[in-house]
Length: 220
Picture (cartoon, helix red, strand yellow):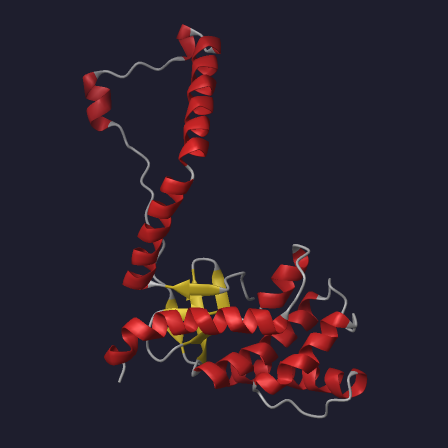
């Protein structure tokens, strides 16, 4: 089963990216944060006022010393594997499914795995050839789109497994930078977003270039 990731930078790059995001968000959302804090304080006051004294547990110093606090551990790191024959067969069958659909309904006889395929794939959406709620077919289209990303942006198909499950993903060389094309379209359609495949490709190209630049010298 493929989960809803679209783009991940694990390890130190993701950590640095997260710090930048938090700093930006805190600066941008200070009024909202103050409003939320005020609402939280009000809720606590109301809760305390409605809680009787008999319901409040008083801990002694000994109780506190022996108290077992809940520990929240970080999930284990993802496991990355090369695709075995089974996964490669799945991709092959999905590519054939999309190729047959394009041949029957669009008149395109073969997929090239390059940007030249994007206009034909776009017609599946523009002409409503594939219903928006047909998740499996749109995930097959996501695999065809992933082939374009792999060939044009120097990525490779791998198996990505974490605490959420197993996904088919693309990775740049041996780094912890991943793109998840399989659910890229079905997820957008589920939330009512329009599909512009060329625009999505352009965004992915920019993101991949963004993580390639600082790491290029490390992978030569």
